[in-house]
Structures are given as C-alpha cells and as structure tokens.
Image 1 (cartoon, rainbow, N blue to C red):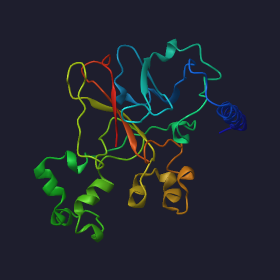
Image 2: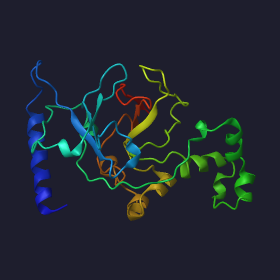
Image 3: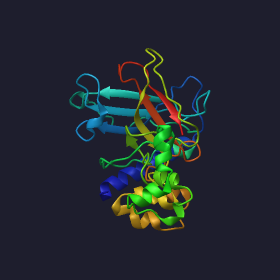
Length: 261
C-alpha cells in the first residue's frame, strides 16, 4: 500500500467513525449496502456470469436480518466497460450490528487450488475408504501417526473443503450435516458461488492452507482474534463462521440464497 492509499484509508476510517458516533439515522433514511467483494472474470474464470457480464459485485446490509440473524446480501453482475461513474466516496452506514460486518478494504490475489469434498459429502463406501488407516499407510501418504485413530480427520483438515474466501469449491460441513439448497423458482439444486469466510485458514494444523508467504505468521502464536493474519478483511460472520452464497445453475436471474456454516 502506498502512502497516498494509506492516507485515504485513514481518512475514510475517520469519516466512518464520525458517522457512527453521530447515532442512528432517521427511521425513513435508506441504509446503504456495503461492498464485500468485487470479482472480475479475467481473474476468476469459474464465475460463469450471465450474458456479456464480466464483473460481479457482492454487497450486504450490515444489519442482522430475520429469520436467521445474518446480513442480507445482493449480487450485481455487470460489464466492467460500462462502469464509468465510479463513486469517489461510497455511501457509509450510520451504524452496523458489529465490527465484523464492516469489511476492511484489501486487494485480492486469486489463485487456483485443488480441494476435495468434506467427508460428509462422500458416498458411504468412500467414507469407509478415507476412514481406513491401513489404506493411508499402504498408499505411502505422509500422515502423522496422531491421526491413526481418526484418519478421517486428516482428510477433512488437510484435503477437504479449503477454508477461506473462495469462488465455487466445496461447502465446509461440520456444524450441520449436508443441507443442499434448491432454487425457489425451478427447484434445481443450487451450486456454491462464493464463500465469505471469517478466517482465511483455520487454527491448529489448518494453517497448512495458508499461502506460503503467510506460513510464518500462521504458525506464530499470540494473535488476538481481530488482529490475526488469517483475518485480513476483519469480516466475522456468526462465531467466526462462513457465509456461503448459492446460485441457480439453470438461470442466473433466479434469486440466490445463502447458508451459514
């Protein structure tokens, strides 16, 4: 970040702090949605946008909405070439439900990774396979012997459903059993579009998912939650959970849905 960018960031933070200190807005005042992610097709071919769109903008309302007490999200597919009137100072909220609903601006560095479905998404036969310690040994896998009693944990921690913000990929089940989402219009099973994660990698051995350049910070101890290098955007959904956005594969015009895991 350049000194100029840092100065702008500091001014924006001060302006927002002043706005929040001013108290709640009038009852009839519209609440601006906050930007969560801006993704370009040139960087992430998995997006599969509708028509000629090549830009996805994800926004949310920084308040808990019933019935599930989570931010309400909105998706905007656009053509980057047609985005000409850019706001120098985006609208800011008077207040937010929590600091975790106010994303810290950052630049994305997308990379393609290989992950596998959570063990709960596997067939019963494959679950038995990944839970068989002798198969891991026979395959010559570099598996710590501490996983001998629960080899499926090794699979889930090191190979399945990568943590962090991601486009597509596999859902991180565990808080609940798999809960497929179905389109409210055509009843087709929906597919993951984006995971908005509270952490880019998990604690413990989950730090193996951290990028190479962040491995030293990931292994270091003593970070408080808001200052952890695994939380660069300082977003926190639920109790450091993930918000997954799902879309209909049959039609991008059908409404999306979400799920907290």
